[in-house]
Length: 102
Image (cartoon, rainbow, N blue to C red; front, top):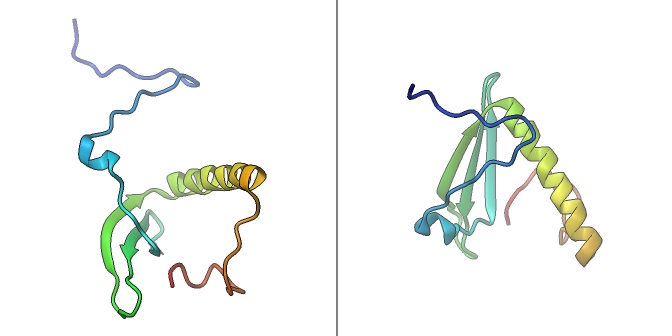
């Protein structure tokens, strides 16, 4: 017997384990995104009303390919959400891509 890791065949679902702490989630109302040729860095922060400083609570680093897959998954889920619950309005935001927070 070998101790080689088992690979998931294409198309088969992957079982995901989530710890108790992670299952609580982290609230974020401010996002900063940076990238290089080899990676995307997404900082999830919280900004409280009246304060001019946001605190980063999670940083996710991923390849450009995974960033594209995340973008596609978010678009798919936003479309499903809006079909079920109605359009999401960005209150007073003409260019929603320039500022990801309030």
